[in-house]
Length: 193
Length: 193
Image 1 (tube, rainbow over the protein chains, first blue to last red):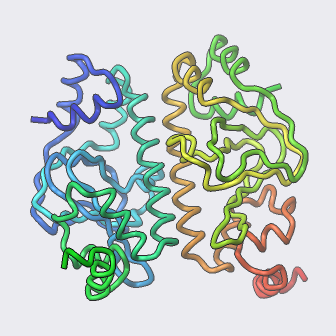
Image 2 (image 1 turned 45 degrees about the vertical axis):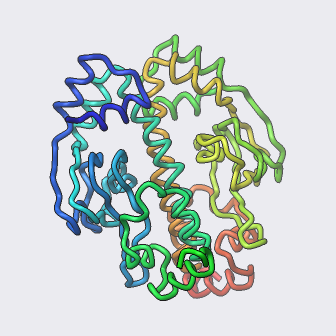
């Protein structure tokens, strides 16, 4: 059942039978309906989740406005990772877009993972390196790029699932009104409309 | 000679005699004059540095203007870490403020460190967790907080060495002119002036 999780971890480190059993025991299945809060901004995040099926968005209250700033689909680890590390209140919420199946691991169990899985520490380092590099890109792009530049990047980076995201959430991601998104699409892809 | 480096690594992981010898062989001493480029924006960063003595600033070209956005002193690991991970051109330069002594480790030698030092992988994970959490704070603060808020944070987080940084570089960090920095200081600390 946890094939996608196992294969994702296996992209980073080799796994033996004992490792597989440990992973199976530490990650717990969680089911979420569509539009459901997985983690709430302001609360301390004590879990990480792996999306086995589904789609989520990260939102943050920026200058009094709820803005979507990341989308994540199957095969990704999610969480308020910097708050999880520091154990400070989350600066973002994670909300499902679709009905989603996740495998959750608590902070305590993650320490067991690092200790007990043969190359557990290496996995932790490599995963956080990946998340770190992506997060720096995301934040810098959020504050410095135009809606049009960000739309092009969004399509390029998320071509597998962009059609599962509503125009309303894409407009929120770009920080513009849905009608402005229409104008951008008309300019970029005149033949599609 | 590498006492500060050893004690910094030792804050994260226990070290035995063999580990100490490996660390000593992998980190190379580098001396830099004041106002010297350690790493240049646009080039791929293949090293990390530990500051044994001295002070540096990170700068980036933001909308055509050179902006300082981080200061780091003795006891810190520095580098274009997200570019180092992805092996993409650095989005920032690192420039010494004072004459500095550093211990540099290449990307290849860092892999040896992870493999050969007893808890090398754990050190890598914990270090990157620390850097990640600080980087997210830095970037978000850079784009969202007022110069006055950022000045208060700068003083609070860097009280050990703030007096070693020129008013010119502090003003660049805040994105304001030196005369506006004077006005902020007058408002915040009327009795000091």
